[in-house]
Amino acid sequence: MFCGHKLGLNYKRLDLNVPTLEEVSRVLREGLTPFFETVDVSVVDCPDLRQAPFHLAQRGLSGDEKVADIGGVPYLVPSVQRDKYYSLKDMASVLGMDESAFLIGAGAGPHREVGINCELMPNISFEDKQTKITNRTHIAKVDERGGCQLSIAKTTDFALLANLYASEGKPGKVLKVYVKKRIGSENFVTTLRQILNKHYGNRAVSLGGVFLLRGGSAKLHIMPDFSTTPLNSDQDVNNWLNFYSMDSPLICLSVFHSYDPDLDLRIEHTHCFSDHNQGGHYHYDNTPDTIEYEGYFNLAKQIYRIDAPIATHNIGRD
Ligand SMILES: [Zn+2]
Image 1: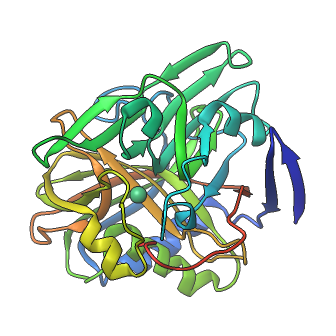
Image 2: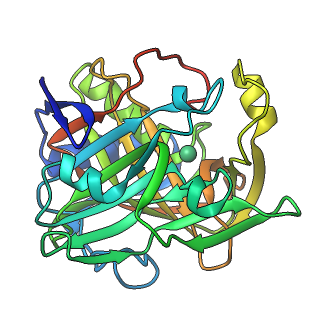
């Protein structure tokens, strides 16, 4: 474990013992069979993720692969710490990726820019030493009527917490996971995570990527503006959040770990956006009989834990 300090942020870096894509493909193919009626897992050349239906800021998921867990729920719960404000540009630098970086994942949106607390779907590429920025990051906020409003971020800022998959965005081999008709009880990401945990035990395997949710609907939440009263339990958090049933197709950006090597990680985090003004934090699909997931993932070589809360807890991590 390496401990560092950059741009005013403390961080820890852990180098991972990374299995091959072929091995993880085999583990997931066998492991997924009890949970979905149709399972197809393989190692493929990454499709061009800039194109429809993905709409990402870079073409692939390869080159200097890392995951980052920044801040945490303790900066939101029980009471918000408004000074916990970051930029994706700085995160690329802390990750040692000043030359080029492609960041995707899930976080809390820039409340100073948006005016209220909101959800962030980071999707941004920095090239040519951060002089060329392609920002396709989406923000979801609760509108005046309690509905969802999706927009494109105007800055590189975010707040409180984020889970990022970082790479140079190059083409390369990735894991393709296709499943249809859910027969298990857990959501798609939890199922993948638990299969890997069962196989790899306390050897952390960390993944990031994008998946499409098709053929049904899903339960998502959007954080409303900050609570004026302290949120002291999962029940308080759930009463405060706005939950929605959102329609497919959803484009979902996901980071997850098979195991937390004592870094106080958020073990899975997935945010979704769409071209129909819906998006937010993914919980699970509502339509197991018709649901279809098609995901492209890569394995991280390092975990960065950035600006971790000193006083931590497990409330609100679902
Ligand atoms: Zn979230």
